Length: 198
Image (cartoon, rainbow, N blue to C red; front, side):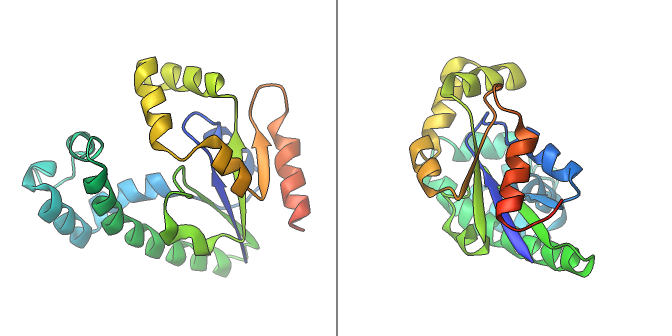
């Protein structure tokens, strides 16, 4: 079974590319969504995060992501410690999910993560990496519209992630979501190059 990683910066169009991939019948694991589920279902993870960040992140036994984010995003060292706790749990969850997809007869799965390149714990799972990209101004406008946030906040988030240049240099495949090129033919070309027939 082949694992295609789908990554890209904030506002790059990953969600749209994933919808196209899913419609082609390819199982997709969205790391951020699964991490949020683990916050609710993994009691050991909850305990370790409370030990690191304090009981106030889970006032009623359920993690409040807004409180957690307010603590960790201004503090890169604390963010690294949280990732060191969460990412191995996500990796184990992905491996179990992938085995179930193999049992279902899938020949390819997609692992989606915005911070794949920033997270070495995940690097070994990739057979190929597909980077979804769009011009920075397009990305900024998408996030402002989607999240109802200021331009300054979006540019700050972009600066926290690895550079677009680094992503593109490390990509096996690039999918452009600039509004000028259709996404489906680009994804079909990626699959064709990987000898996956759809």
